[in-house]
Amino acid sequence: MPVVVVTGGSAGVGRATVEKFARSGWDVGIIARGEARLEDAADAVHALGRRACPVSADVADAAAIERAADTIESRLGPIDVWVNNAMATVFGPVAKLSAEEFRRGTEVTYLGQVHGTMAALRRMRTRNRGTIVNIGSALAYRAIPLQSVYCAAKYAARGFFDALRSEILHDRLDVHLTMVHLAAMNTPQFDWARNKMHHRPQPVPPIFQPEVAARAIHFAATHRRREIWVGFPTVKAIIAGRLAPGLLDRYLASAGYSGQLTHADKPPNSPDNLFEPAQGEWAAHGRFDSRSRPRSWEMWTSRHRDVVTAAALLLGTAGLARALTTLRR
Image (cartoon, rainbow, N blue to C red; front, side):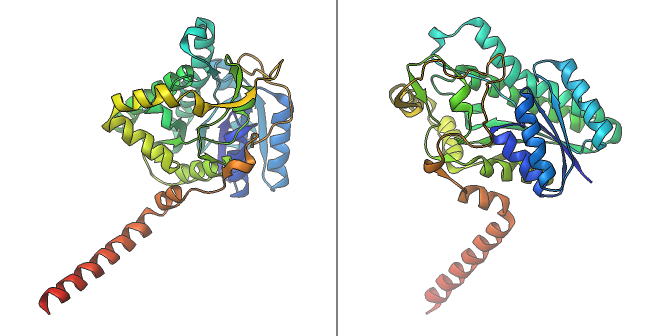
């Protein structure tokens, strides 16, 4: 049976991805820090009839990720797909952040993808097969205020993966690299990320359920796509950033704060998972279920691009034929 590894697989998009792969017949290695949520995710995999191997490890620790990969392969078999999903961040303007917070966010969100990729590639290189999926974001192309830690790490991850692609081609390896860039997702990130603001954060609407991301990640892992952009807001952000970056800077200066903050005050003693796992029974979803979309039409057309292209060509041909007939008459 195929084997997938998902980092940050105990909650949020990672948890939804774990369940999506298990439901599709995969055995799943799950890497995260919180042991209770790890066991809960493993139980979900077992309930779907698949094997699970939960490993408690911090993706910022390269040696720990190497040991985790060894453990998973010894229990489940060779790793076919590795999904780098783990992340940590801080909400707040740069003026309120410390160098330590920047360092930790970078170690998890950027270097965590480097460490996971290196561990996966060492094993896939010897077998000359496998797929590595890095989870990006619209913010890997267009940075926004209050999220400099996260944006910078995602930019760096994209640069790292692009450089590695050329090396893979040079070495003629049959190892596929793909990135999945996400829109705003309804995950616990907005409940447990360190928050330097006075109000509770929110994803910039429209918000999508984590299962939308999980379906895209599974699709990316089983199809040869260089990148997948999830949700039309991702498409708009990336294209707008390329066409009118200065105009977008000014727009975000006025709307970037209010769009990311609710009117609710930040609760005292809010959870904080930057350096230690946050306590609580979180799974895939955050607190925005009533405002979140269960599907993305843009993602559907991306997954079925051959059908959509064929339909567009047929419609275009039919329209051209009708126009020519009209002209002849």
